[in-house]
Image (spheres, rainbow, N blue to C red):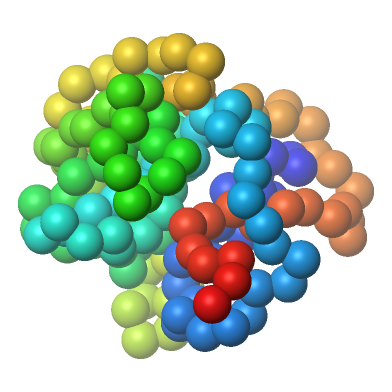
Length: 148
């Protein structure tokens, strides 16, 4: 459940407007979050996501745009990296209860055009089978600035 909270927190982070809301943020080790995905459209970063299976990425429903490209294995968004892998999206599955006006049920699955090649830097998020206690703390991941 703790990892599910991380995923849900990612969804909330993707929804927040770009403002100076970062608290205790900083760069992370290159191998620390191999499930982190970057979603691009028209060459621009749109949202973050989480690899949950070699063919599936979990993200926010409000991130649905045409011609999405998913990048895995990235650490630095400003440069091409030998570890990175890119895939187009062949199917987007939005939660049937998603409401764009309220962002209720703001969750979506993306099926990649080809399975991710798993490596030290590309791994699905290991989901917990048991529920954690309420009020368990978690970390939020995403792409953003750590300084001006």
